[in-house]
Image 1: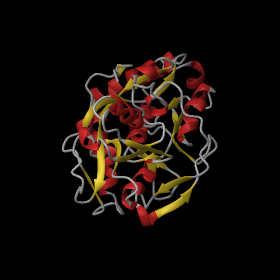
Image 2: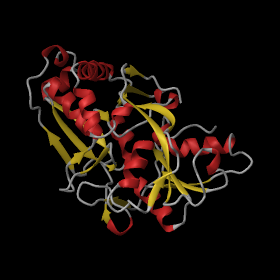
Image 3: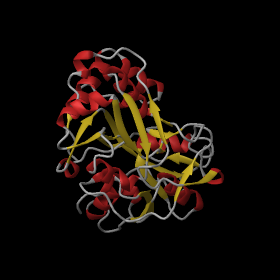
Length: 316
């Protein structure tokens, strides 16, 4: 298996992206005819701030690094084109989704204003390395390759999903069914790395033609246009896309159950152990008081709940 990269590895691909597309219809992730020309090219892109709305937990707040506690701001970096985890609300500016809801709750417990910056996916790790953001919150899969340079707080369990055209004309249900087909996925993602891994194992005699694209929306468009037989993404994302306004009736999910479940969560620099441990302890409190499960259920993602909040628990 080649070393994981970007979403699945230590170093993010530094290839420049000349264009990006956001597929948005209100708060939904729309497909095909609703493509809007959009751009997300750096840390200066549109951001949404959320101020704490409750009294902070003084014990948890005391765990924060002094500079963040004194500033009263937690700087979150994301790429807001990956619903239901992060996407743009109807105002085309505010970032919403499961990750954002969880971090708004974390910020409230810590007495911090959560400042969310939407940027290109390949800018997230450089921004974290340069301390322009405090944490990457972008449905990042916890992998052993990434753990060499970064730390994770694993607060969600997600599988993988295969999006196919409505009617599933090639009967794609399993990993083996993708062998010999054209499959699209998000550039630099864990899913691209998994497809490459399949080509060395399950599909070694009949490899998948892998197309890596700038956004998950682009991968869906490849399927819609017939240039790809399927797209491969996190299962929750695949199911959201297939049922979203603009996608309903055009796509379906090939696999009955999520494939290859893995842990995911916010990503921290190795030198940010104080912040990492504070977030871990805060999520544990949110689990204990029921807030965590309530947020997951509100986003129809309750099945991905974890009971133990691990640090670097990923084994992929």
